[in-house]
Image (tube, rainbow, N blue to C red; front, side, top):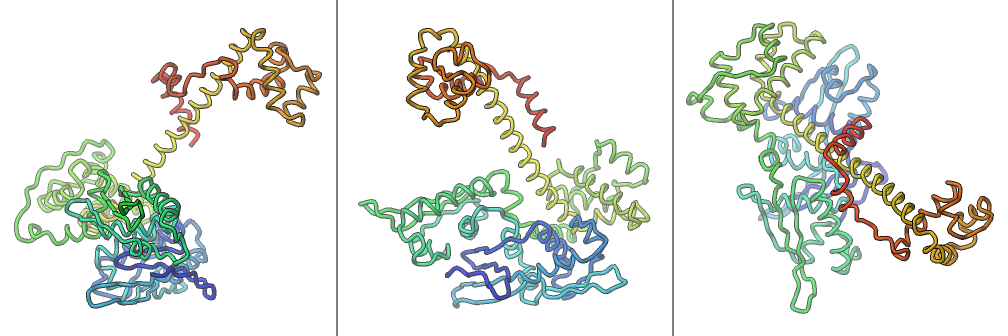
Length: 486
């Protein structure tokens, strides 16, 4: 498949989706992504039954965190969705089907009303009801890989993943693999360059930034010539539940479980431990131990996990309170109970939980990074001070080596030589360390530290210093410090 170039004339963004490969020329910005999913989720339950959809502008603005009362920015985001072109190339045993859609077909905002009316193209709407297609579009619009090659390999991995075993493996010829990446004949023509500059970088990118573990192994002849690649893919354990079972399918499973209509499910009284939720239910006189509600909560608990049920109820409570403040939930008990019955709220919760989990993981990774940076700063300070003390105690013995290192490693126009000339009268001897001003001493020490081995100084490694010096208390203090800085 040839790489699709950006259309210069109309500046449309193009997404390419096929049964084997996905490439992206440009990604939607975060606001446009939020708008797309808000419109889609608002319409989701009726996608099979109608072709025009309404959403209150106030609700939409709140969902995408659009603060302005003016609709101009919102109109620009809607126009951006309409400009995103999706090109499908779907191969099956009957041949190849080519299709073109835009993310949004039509929309209108009537002056004096609070409603936004919109529609999808009939072709796209038909596909959006298929969980696998929806999931691919989700991945396409939200994955944050460093390159389009990473995304192409990611989607190739998804296509060859067996959901029951959460594992997949497939061999590709060299030409097949290049085809899936959408490479021109002249691009990375040599297999070694393809492996080094595309495959290895994308493999690392995917393993760091996605829910999959991917391994791509060159297939070689007896003389070492690369003739193809073996793709091995598996789902990271933390993502098995939420990524292999598409989000839409989760909701549909709840709607379509035969036990909802054919037989009673086993229900247990709901145990609430959160004080805020207890007070809310008590103040509003909301009874969750009604059999119909318990039956519904049991089904939700089966989908989310019993340990997450109370968190879900807190999510509904928060939404109820927000809507009440805006005047949209006049009767809180009825509004809250209806939310429990609403599959769309369950879907919103799943997506919000993933968003918060990702944010929490990103924050934890950032804290770890900053803690390590602080520790390395302390380590560098320790080494500098220890080296200074070592040199001072052995100044007479090390003076000749100091003079040699300064004269042989620092050219006459180096800034340290200029400092020595201006502040230390050009004298190069042990007094640079033992009897000089700080603006001379510390630059000189910093330079000499690079040649510490020549001075007989044995540098302790960072890991050894850390094991010897860093206590749990110090680590917690640094964590608290960097957390406040975030």
